[in-house]
Length: 306
Image (cartoon, rainbow, N blue to C red; front, side, top):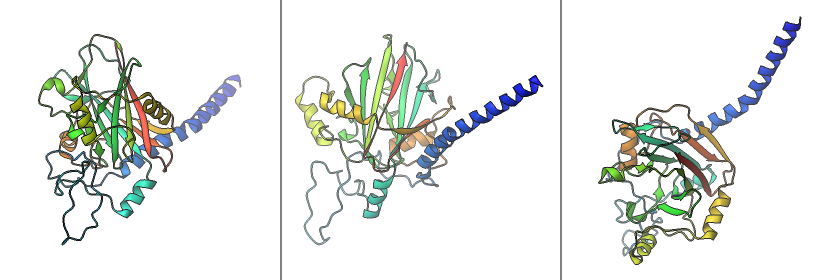
């Protein structure tokens, strides 16, 4: 009888744990499902551009076709044939009510030089290298800041020498940093040195450009003025604002599968402006804003090296 009571109590305990775990598991599935649902079912048509257009789209023109052409502004995306089209009114309304999501996949360089998925919580060693693939579920602007051991922050993207200092990201067209197509092998990876510490990467995905942060021609002009290697640093006011926004609640889903190599379609998508479809690999980590009214999603990733 005593054994029966113990088993019965154990059954009740396990049942209670299952009830507690079910909502959390369901929430993760909802996050991943909501993010991937906005991917197209079929592979999008290959872009005619050699690389994604990262400059902000032009506003829809209201000038009649027979009227004089309007000079492009300093923030234009270039010739009309390569500019990213501005969203329609219905598309803009959909974007405004869509929960903002960010997918992150971390790759490390294996002994054969291949990019393979790795757990972000992995402790890296001297000489190991990483590359990050980012994917958003909506059009917007991507900023990446870096701090070392809680030191001063520096903006590493956008950068004057990358994408013409643009940071406009299209829905499900991934972005990798550093680029796997960089001219030199050493520029294709972040490499950990022999100084132990924590590299924190802060990602800010916004519907509109951040106030007070230079991009495009403004960032190029800033870098042209300084004599040392260009690295824009946010003011304490801007940094505090980003830290505050990072406290906004997010729902997350983290994969438990690592070790698979980056697929050719993932690399082609990030370097040639081709969107990912539902048949392509999923991000390792997905974060989604809780509110549909959020205008930004700010989060961070800590890379620890010993």
